[in-house]
Image (tube, rainbow, N blue to C red; front, side, top):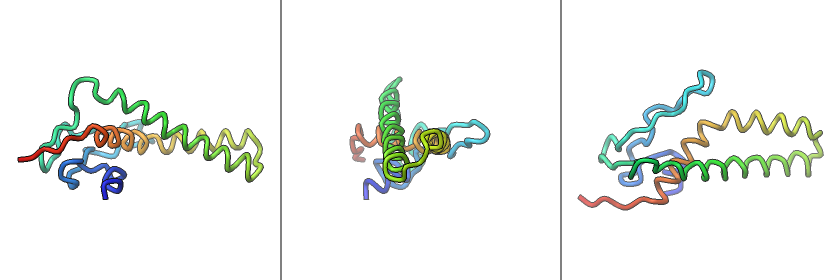
Length: 118
């Protein structure tokens, strides 16, 4: 259940509120906007200034995993030309960047989550 809520970018405290206000728009170069607190239970997502710097490492790991696995499948197994593999991977990474951003922040929040008891 928890893993599903991470992929849905839901609050780690109540599992219902959204972490993000809007999904962003890749075509208009808009990144997703985060809520400061959960709209339902008021759980604060950012613990301190600079809290999400660590999420960049998570984002790098996700992007690297996508690139390495795509390269292994397309180049190693399907024997596609290296330039085609490079272009395909670049397009996939650009198209998945908004979701990668949201997923890395959600994972980071869940990694440092402490249950708020009221």
